[in-house]
Image 1 (cartoon, rainbow, N blue to C red):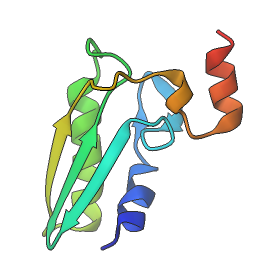
Image 2 (tube, rainbow, N blue to C red):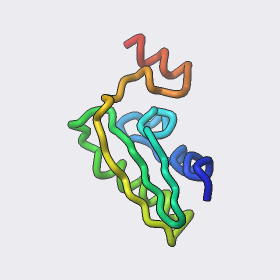
Image 3 (tube, rainbow, N blue to C red):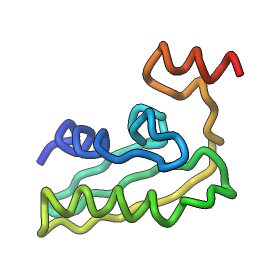
Length: 100
């Protein structure tokens, strides 16, 4: 299991409120650490008041454990720095957000 493997998995998880982009491409994943059979994510949400927070965290965890069932997944949620549209990795979609 590599960082790239985890990124590929996270690219299958979509924020239900922004279904055009996965959570990795949205820029919600700040860090990924892998140590033996443990994956730790440092991630954020588009807003501290995100009504889908629990669902997004569970979907991310489930996506990883579905591929790697013996893996412990720890997700640390942070709002520092706060998410901004400029963090979107897809340039065309980032421009769409910034124009709003």
